[in-house]
Image 1 (cartoon, rainbow, N blue to C red):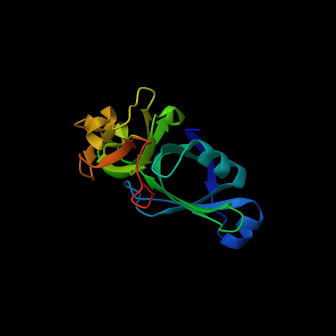
Image 2: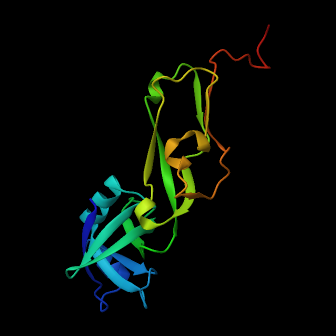
Image 3: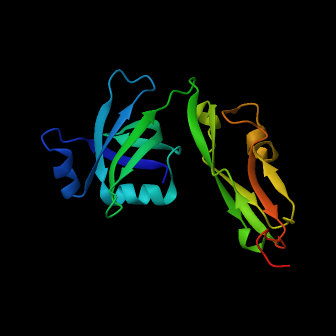
Length: 187
């Protein structure tokens, strides 16, 4: 879902009225816009958006036939039922760097021969919109006990087009041997 159909927000209705009608109030700001734009989308569209994308993802908004390249900047959820209450989008300019996060997901984690500890789930960075990274997959299919992976070990973060906002030697994950002796165990 890279294109999202949105509408101008009904200014006569309050945010609570919109939510009761199955509408999510949203806003778009930045990126050369003189003023922020209040928009809205159906709750089903918002739910589908977050099944496929996450905060930091780049998408396009279609507002009355005009396309806006944006980044999902923030999402607010209802604590009781989990429905999306509000979404903030930041408009993108092709020649302007933007701060974002890349989400780290592990593949084949169930095949790891030891205790897997993941310390970092998101890596903050700045880049031009065309160089944005949404998701990084780390394949642990050939992982061994004692293995450690730092941010600079992941190929996507070695690009000179991305300005990391975290130390390159920050530990992403570590695999420890299963045979650890507890200091409290009887000998």
